[in-house]
Picture 1 (cartoon, helix red, strand yellow):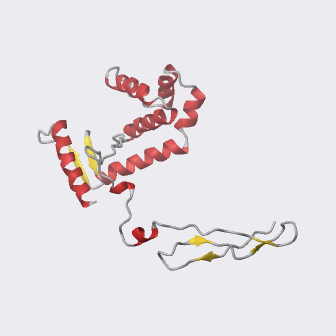
Picture 2 (picture 1 turned 60 degrees about the horizontal axis):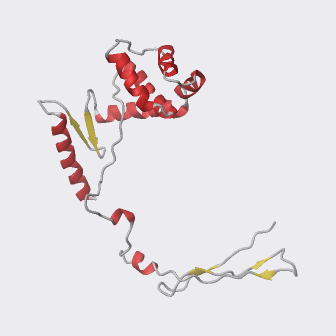
Picture 3 (picture 1 turned 45 degrees about the vertical axis):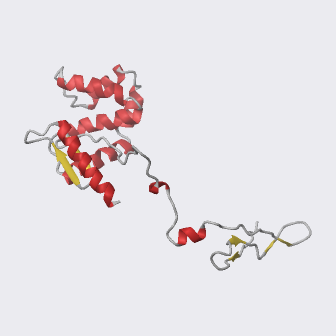
Length: 199
């Protein structure tokens, strides 16, 4: 089939803008028939073009939050890269909360550093994950890409310990010099407010 061409009528701003058919539509019984279109008044044009438009980002409510926290695994050696792969595989398979605590206990309480894919697969399978599903996720593009991106973030932010907070990709707040986690949150809150004011 042939496609009708539709012309656009553009009267002066404020007069209402709408699409108006100007050509014929072939293939309709009785030969080419005139297509019809109705102008749709656009009442928003004036305020948008004069800078008076209001968007979701402009809304400020009492107690409204301005922060999204994104977790990223620490990674500054090859073993931690393997552990980051555990992190993203668990996320991909929807078992993050379960695997996170099990992996923590394996590493920090049992001394099993989960260095090989076989050891890691056993841990996932013990938590009810299908071995084939684990293998597919472990080597998937999504998981390997997430690991690479996390590694890039760690290098760019010069993270070499935990905990660390990165604020808006500009500031790194880390523990040290006696700073507690509560102190870190206060500093991060101050920086967040500064960034929020900048818009």
